[in-house]
Image (cartoon, rainbow, N blue to C red; front, side, top):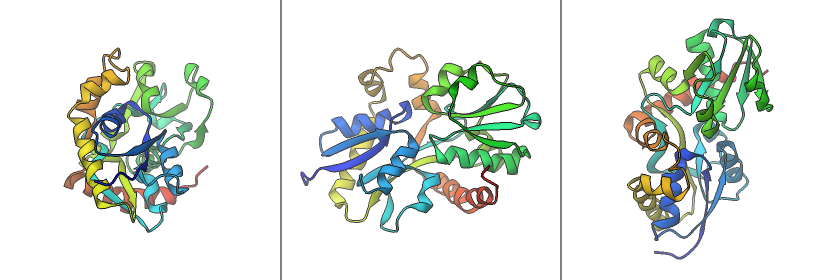
Length: 257
């Protein structure tokens, strides 16, 4: 096994801690970890500051041709993912302003796709930069929320739509939020070590929860073992193809607002 260090960009959310635990503790992978929200991982990789990254699938088409999907793992869900939601006190048909959490381009694209294909709504699209809006939402406002910030707000809004559930209801497919991508030239033994590290970490999910201080959160274990589905299997590859070939084309036709 080579001792060459690789730079790995990963998501800084609860859903990634089994991967991070494996990378940091499995022992065979010599890596420097760069942690950020999903959009940041894509930016770091695009700038050439990482050799391997957990990339949101909405950012994949923009990557250079010398990149490839690697490992049999992803961030995915078979049904409700719980941490990617549309929240509002207004019914879908009456939403006028939809504020988009820009930390994940994939979730933004998925929201736009569902607006056209499932919900039949055409709100004014706005970027969510002021999170205090969530504390006193105006009539007609809705919010795309992603990541760890979702959990404390469960039960706060009258209407709560899990985007992975909405996708599953529409397509009968699971959803893939992010996949591992490497640059051409990353040594095969490094990719083998990454695969082993991810497997090792997923097998020790509870240890990861304790290691990173999430053991005080009653939902953490169920979220990682029930809501999240990490295997990049044939159904998820099919779902990724549908999102690329149908979802992205649909969203590109929408005025970005």
